[in-house]
Image 1: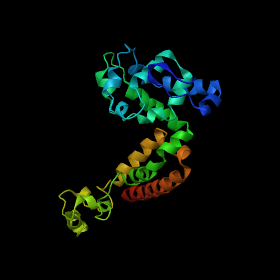
Image 2: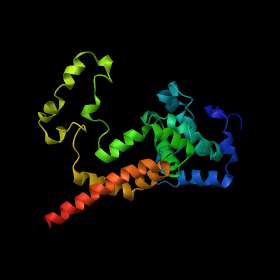
Image 3: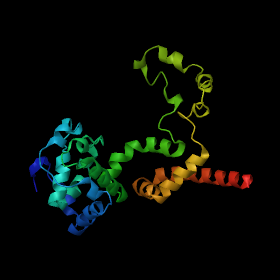
Image 4: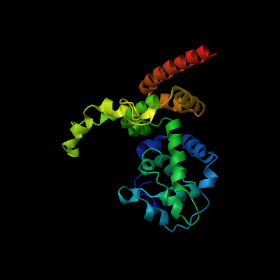
Length: 242
């Protein structure tokens, strides 16, 4: 297929064409088997309101209406192809859901498609998510995306000369914050060990660690070293309390 109606004008990639039909069907069925799928798609008037409202459509060759239409048509090859790059243009703002007269949720469909793409460790998905590795490392090991000491004047010269003053005696300034969890410099706020252990449990039960191992084994190993160290520390504290 060299072009498609409804706006999907990019040709299906050669890599997609080479994938066995059974594998394409398996992937699309994995999306459709998600318990949320039937709650996100009911029908389509083909009115284009979702695409007209979509911020991503203004900058990319992306249409939420296209997602819905392809599922209704059961266009397996195009859907499989979309799951490698197309769906990552979605900003997950869910404006499409708010505006749809049928209450379809194209953004929700994209979320399911992304989860399946991650779970199956598509090479395109690995490449797209690789730049976010450092952010993921910080979030999963500290519970924070940012830390106070990241805001260095040399990194943000456009913030003006007062930036240097703001960073002087940063530790003392952070200690003056009236709530305990905000006194840290290495993180934006402190996450308790108990909370971290609860998050690890959720990530294990929902398969997050398993998906991470498939996507980036090196990052997985670094994160698991910290996770296991914290779990050991928590067990020791728990035993002491008993």
